[in-house]
Image 1 (cartoon, each protein chain N blue to C red):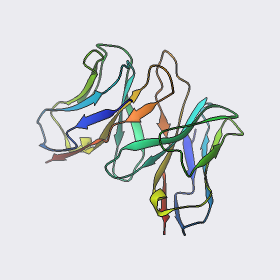
Image 2 (tube, each protein chain N blue to C red; image 1 turned 180 degrees about the vertical axis):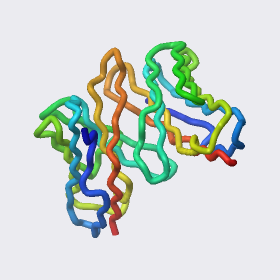
Image 3 (cartoon, one colour; image 1 turned 45 degrees about the vertical axis):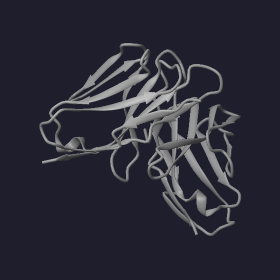
Length: 112
Length: 115
């Protein structure tokens, strides 16, 4: 059964600091997605990772995928207040019954 | 383009009442999805559709029905609402599942309370 775990669940960090959010999943997959959700809002796509070793960067965020370790990371560089949001990873199953499973999310608060 | 829209934005039901949530997309996407979001549980897939006239169950389908009579619309029905169905419901759509991945585009959500 495909399970997706994120940690930490909550993260409070100072502006200017670096940190990493982790997304672990339980079965084979090479398709992983990161989304952002602002409070009371909908989700928006951040990154699409489709192969082992894939790395994508957008501004202060960088995402990577290690399919052998079944791990994706979302690295935040020099955090700013505008990055405060909840970040979700989602894993898409490779075969069998279609599954697209979201992690429980990491709520990030960047303090000025 | 409006993207993905949902109707209504808010709704309060009494236990046992029925209602239909409407999702519409104008991006010519093949796939459409209904999720529910509950505190501390992320998003869970209720039902999905890979094309007009087709639907399939997701992780938590019980108590819900769906229909996709037109490619651009995906309806979620609650026949007899229960307090456990109090949640925020999101509709999403995507082109299809192919080599470019399956990035999903989300609607603004419907906040449903069942008393």
